[in-house]
Image (tube, rainbow, N blue to C red; front, side, top):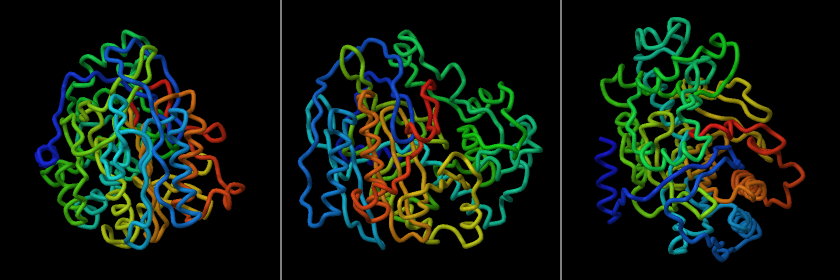
Length: 438
């Protein structure tokens, strides 16, 4: 299954997992992460972060992309950034900046893996829509039909409303147990909380202990619980886990050799940049944690090359038929400049609409975006480190997304560049006061 393949990847890469490494988390925003209260570090490491020299560039556009990438790691705003651009099935640019880990200062590998957070939702939604095409699921059926007794008022909440976040179901990651507002809270999570294994039904029960936010279909509100339920739906309908179905239906057919959907394995296979929490006495490595807390809402691991390949295949019609892809791209308003479909975001780039998703887990932030026809894609993963430089870092990432996604230089498009969610001009999709968002 998924963790078995993950273990094989770890052995193949020769990676040794050290369980004793301490961890924490960053507050989650979409582009610019925000600060939160931090406790004392238990295992401080050297805090020096330096941008890599610019990669050899053959055009103004190449130089602009590498300049934006280096800007993200300037002043230790991010400890590492990875990015790649794909056009018509070919990687036309990739770059990296910063370091793999703060202890050694080794340069980050541009082909390295990372946690993709809520980009996982696009994989899960794709499987659900494939099941729609197979006549095993209907989008406008109530979730009660598939998961009887699991969700209060489930007879009035449709599968579609789960996938586009209009269900009104409480977001389990907003429960107080996932808020680390004091030093004691954080210290406890560092020592034991990050290793805890959660069952999907347990996460749903945490959510349904709270009142719903609104009547189904009347508003939009991002809720990770929706995609825990989508994963449970896949299991119920197919008899196999959501991770197994993603593996069988997407990862293997597309040859995504560095994409994994772990269930409880804390490791990231192969070369990878580490995630950190900046604390008063030094950085704490937060790379490793049990992903069952994210499950089908955000447990995935991938690379920029694999994510751009996936986005191209999805929007190019290789994974879904025309009817199912049209359903996925049917959106509801979510925030200024952002509409949400079925596990797919529509953002306003300098060149028009870009489609994809963002993702966030402790220590990692990810974006993958592409044009509507699957011709051009950009993927960026970065490791936020110093909240004091979150603004400049977020602006640099925005440059990467716009220049990579649109094929223009930042100088040519600066006047038209929209603010991205998570900046001062537009609201973040995640609350900085909540510890875990995906």
